[in-house]
Image (cartoon, rainbow, N blue to C red; front, side, top):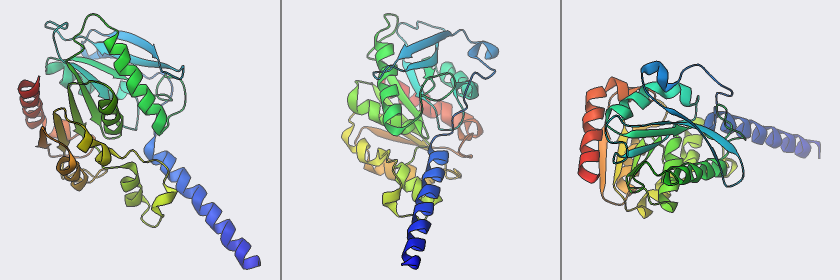
Length: 269
């Protein structure tokens, strides 16, 4: 009996450990206002606040394109799990340089957005961000690109299932959070990992143009996951191979990235 109690306590402790690691791995928000805005890199921007369906107030930036923002593609950018929008100025600059309007926001619990992050929560945030954009009269609602980086790929993919975005970019995105969890905790039973974010199960259902971007040197999300997403995705679809680490492959392969993005936009937009 004592041994059984000991085993139960060990199992409970193991479950708590798995939950802790999962939480720290999936969501790593930088909370509160940080230094840095698009103005610091010479970009005009609007400070935006909008509400989610469950009543939370989220914060974002809208950076209008230099030429004809009313007709430009609008990139709805979903950032990765670590940090907040203040850490994405370089990426904003690159997307802006492609001639797009850029709308980037912080998920619930990130930056100065209200709430606590969760899988269901970031999906609600994605819908709210799109609905905010389609409430604007100064952009084309039929030229919105959902762009997800890493964790953001799950939010962008969920959005593409429920809202009429024109195209989808998945950059360094995982097949599912459970697959990443098994990579980090190979000894943990799959059922103990609660966060799903099954991107690979959603991409076959999405018929809009897709661009999947990944690097073989990605040390966080294996390149093989990007390949599997591409294989599973319904057409039309393109694959862009970059070189470099998870957080900076778009910089390490700047010319390849910009050329690939321009070709995708030119072909489908």
